[in-house]
Length: 161
Image (tube, rainbow, N blue to C red):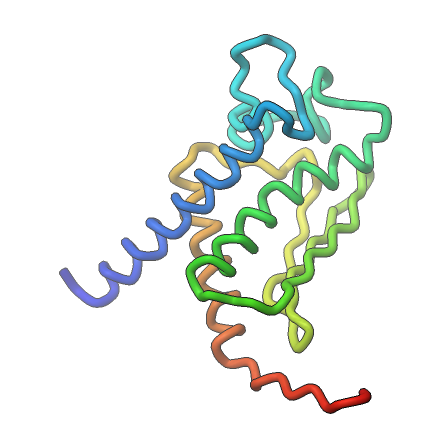
């Protein structure tokens, strides 16, 4: 196995772990979205099903912007938690999501020192054709964020500042 193949496999493995975090959070008994049917896999409905609107009708609540924010938050929170877990990060990682139902929703993941990820997509395009594609994309985003964290200067807080 070449070094590139090893890196690709590791990236995909990390992406799969992130997808499992997202699936677990999305299908949790007390998750933000609750399915229409008892046995509905909300993860598949939200992230692996093509749609022509921001969210499936049966998952829209009282505030569409909050719903869009939650849809993005579940994905990027999974990424954030994987970074914290694998890299042993103790510092806070900030996740900001600016939802829109008319244009792109912007998501930013950052530390106190630098931006780790900037992502934007229209809510009706925020899905993947299958789990493999989702894992590949999220593994690549993870890899870039991890590189940025590794290259960040060490934080030195001064007393009283």
